[in-house]
Amino acid sequence: NTHSLKAMTSTYDPDTLLKIRKDFRMMKVYTIDSSSTSEIDDGISIQAFTDPTTGDLRKRYWIHIADADRWAPRNSRILEAAKQRSTSIYLPNRSYSMFPSKLASGVMSLKHTVDTCALSLGVEVDPVDGSIVEESIVVTPSLVRVSYRLTYDQVDEMLEEGVGYNEEWELGSMVSIATKRRKVRIEKSSLDRLLSVKIPQVTPRVVFKDESESVSRELDENDDNVAISLNIEVSNNGGRNSTSGAEEATATIGNGVISSKIQEGIPDVSPANLLVTEMMIMANEALGRWGVQRSTESKEEKEGGFIDLPYRSQAAPLFSERPTEYEHFMKLQSEMVGGGYCAAWYMRRFSTPVSVSSEPMPHAAMGLDYYVQWTSPIRRYSDLQVQAVVKRYLRRKQVLELLRDGQPVPSQISATDLGGLGKELRLARNNISGDEGPEDDNLFTDMSPINYKDGTGLIKAARFVQNGSNEYWMLEYIKRLKQKAKDDIEFECMVLGCFNEEKQLYSIFIHEIAFEYKYRSEKGQLNAGDTIWLTPMDINPRMGLMTLTLSARSRGLKQTVSKSTETARAA
Image 1 (spheres, one colour):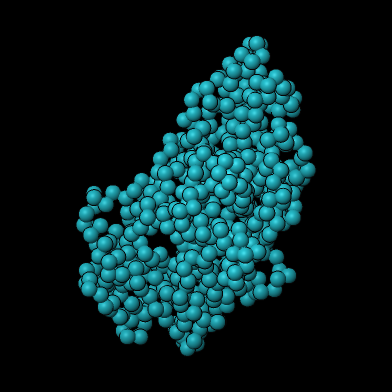
Image 2 (tube, helix red, strand yellow):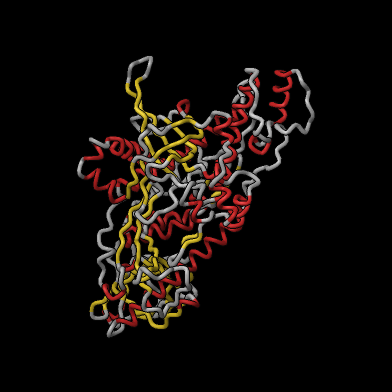
């Protein structure tokens, strides 16, 4: 539309005018995403250099984040449209971008061999444990040119064949640091330290068998041209690994019994996924530490005024307040009931909510002292807000330096670009120039304040829509299995635990499709870790309903061999 075209063709860039956008086009930049990703938020680099004092070789790790703020500045119509959506929504049958797709996958994205605006963070880390060297953190607007557009599979292959440790040694170096950082974080994490196993998660994906069809039209569950594939992931806070399988419903049916190839031996987190996830987590931690440094500077040291960042925190679980439940959890974990899945399911009740505040506090689950989320500004409005705050701070700092040096500030620069200079910098500017100036000086009055709460309600609504859509298409997938089978299909399931003892309601895990669902026991009390064979009967995807009943196989029940005979407890 007109607003997208205007944004894409805009030549106004305050960071270039103020000469704070660094030229990093000679730096080797990698982007690593899935092959279908079109909105590319992040790139990574390593800068090797010699310490001028000691002569030692040092490495600075760079994370380059797409500068969406460059194309959607404050008070623009494009920014307002993004605020109305607040997040990109990814459904099994289609996606809805926060920005118009031509803008999001065009000038905003870090595209291969194309000069692209970014906000870059550079940081050095301790080679022993991967901890951040705080005094090394650098944050700057930049201009980058992506050297390699890689997929996760390609990076894994390069590492496996040795290319990632020789010709492309940067990849191997980043994997090494990522591995160390994840290990240290898990040791500090109250959740991952206790859990050795995570429950795999499934995400359905809907595609047209005939690629000439457009997914923009409404998909009907009875449409034979629609195929449903499943993507199963093992996710950790330090990375994830996935395997795609069950692309056609008929491929998994054998004599009415669902065979399970997609669930067998899902490997540990792949090096490529670990690399990208840990680098992004490091960027989030580093920006948090950078923000703390800025807020604790003395009045004399402050050059850009106050910077307010949204620190995400999570309190550690208070196990001491729930000793009986904690004892049961430890029993499930120590005996690895259900291969560890039962403990992972039970652990959810101890999770504390994540809070966002201007006060820096630890994030227990991540195992970090500080955490500011900012690495997906094309997809998350809150990340875009952080990007704008950081850039405004850097601009204010540059303006003050110009004033101190008696240099003119480019006339195009406005209060909106700077976020206002604030009382302290107003006084500093007056002292430098000797001019009191009016209170409403265009450099000092912020006409577009940033509120981190904008759009938070819409993000919660988007999650509700995504979860509902995922469940709908999973039930549709099972419905198709049932329709195509000659006989009733049977699923091998594991009892994860009981969430309502009075109604005998249990959470079960269907191994073959990594799907969690609810089941009302027909045989009374069940134990965590029990194996039961269930047959799906009445399935209504639109209502989100599926009835599971015991199959004839082994009377539908196989008791788990375990030291623990304690019943799965209700939530």
